Amino acid sequence: MSATEVVPFDWHRMFIGDAPWLFLLEIVFRTLLMYGWLLLLLRIVGRRGLAQLSIVEFAIVIALGSAVGDAPFYPDVPLLHAMLVVAVVVFLQWGLAQLINRSEKVETFMEGRPTLVVDGGRVNLQGLKDVSLSSEELFERLRLAGVTQLGEVRFAFVEQGGNLSIFRFEARSVRLGLPIVPPQDLVDSDALENEARADDPHACTNCGDVEASRPAGPCPRCGQRRWIPAKVDAFEDA
Image (cartoon, rainbow, N blue to C red; front, side, top):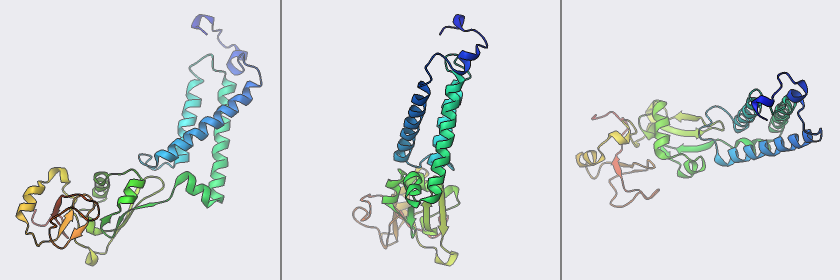
């Protein structure tokens, strides 16, 4: 419909349009299908980047934004159709919330489980793979929480909402670990290696595995070959 054909405040066009009433049922079907498809895709992609929103909450933000955004601007989109889409999405969200509250299986399927990414000062490589997070991104999040070396961290979990929760060792129990402060991009690992003795404890720069002396070959946990001296205090000798 062109701008010249639009009759302002044509109530029939604004609320109903020219489609038959049965088309309203098709709108319900379309909304259910697209919302379900959106949830499935978000579940496959995972929690990365969702910040504090759950997958279901993120989906409803997208769905409502699309439904509400079109109606005010396009004269050929009847308001009744947009209102029906919004109502279906809201009630669908309410129904999913009830299912999630009543069923642990539904909650796990929709929102996943917390994922262990650091265990006893070492990176849980499978956990990182499960949440599509790299070691460098994990180290960045740990630095933002004030962690200077991996041996400080007893456990770290990527929660259902994508946030990182960290549980530290007590001060007297802190272990030797991979220094992550300063970031490895700013560290001359070759210079550190030249200053260290071969019989000093060394940490793998990828997974944080600590060996009593500098290994001659790759890391037994992840296969990487870069090692730097392990420390209890990341700022020692800095």
